[in-house]
Image (cartoon, rainbow, N blue to C red; front, side, top):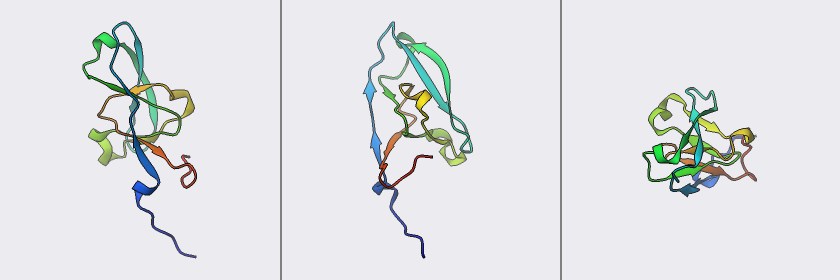
Length: 104
């Protein structure tokens, strides 16, 4: 029994659920730890304090990459308790093909 190689683009697709920050609305932010140690909830921030033109909302099982620290394993799968949090465009998000990839 051998191992089959599959191109990553065949099992994950880029996803963007973007919205422009709204002053007066609080946005729960997440961060991604190094070396595969997972995501964590950061402080919430008012839309008026956000410098980015848009944020992207996360959902359970999204795969998030911190572009700045990707080479240090700053990649995670979003757990259900962080679904609905937001990331900037510095954190590309991908939706896994759940028929061919187990997010765990």
